Length: 253
Image 1 (tube, rainbow, N blue to C red):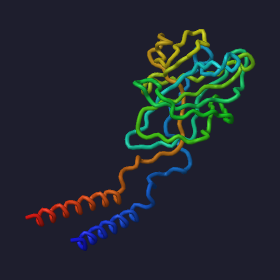
Image 2 (image 1 turned 45 degrees about the vertical axis):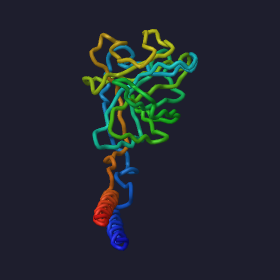
Image 3 (image 1 turned 90 degrees about the vertical axis):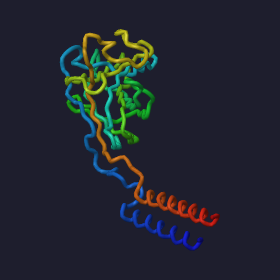
Image 4 (image 1 turned 120 degrees about the vertical axis):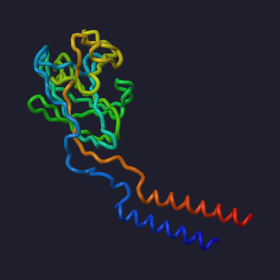
C-alpha cells in the first residue's frame, strides 16, 4: 500500500515538473517590461467655451492648500491586467498668469457606485513634459490594475496669486463610460462645487454629458490563471486520497 502510494506521488510530481517546463518560469504571464503602448485614450479636446474649454483642477498652495479636482473613469477589459507607466492629459494655464505649476498630483481610484472610491495610487510628479497642450507624466511607481472600473484624477500644484490656474480640457466626444466627477472640499472656487465626489452634470447642469481628455500608457497581459502544474498537483492529491479511501473500506470489509 505505502509503496503504491509513493509510486503515485512520484508520477504526479514528475507530471508537475514536466508541466512547469512546458509553461516556462512561474508567473511569466505577460509582457511586463516591454516598451509602453497606449492602453486607453480619449484625447479629443473641446476648445470652445470659457478658458479655452478647460475645467479647473488644482491645489491652491497660497489658499490653505485647498484642492478643487476633477476625475474621469476607464475600464480594464475582462481577463486583462494593465501595468500603467505613463499618463497624459490635455490642459492649459489660464487666469492672470501662465504657470508653470510647481508639480502635478496624479491619482488613481477604485470605483464606488459610479464615483471615485478609495485611492489606489497617489503620486506627486515634479518632472513632466508639455507639447501643444499635452501634459505627459511618467509615474514614479507603475500601477498594476486587473479587470475592473477605475478613475484617474490629475491636478496641478501651484500658487494662484503668482501662477494663476491650470485646467483640464473637456473631451469633445460623446460621453464615454461614466460622466466626469468633481469635488471641492473647502469651497475654494466660487462655482459652488460639491464638497465630496459628485457627478459633473450636478455642477454644470447645462451639459448633458461631460468627460475630460486623458490617455493611459504602459503594457498589458492576460490575468494569470492557475497553472497546469498546479492543477496536476491538485488532481494527483485527489486521486491518491480517493485510492486510500477505497483501500481502507476494502480492508474493513
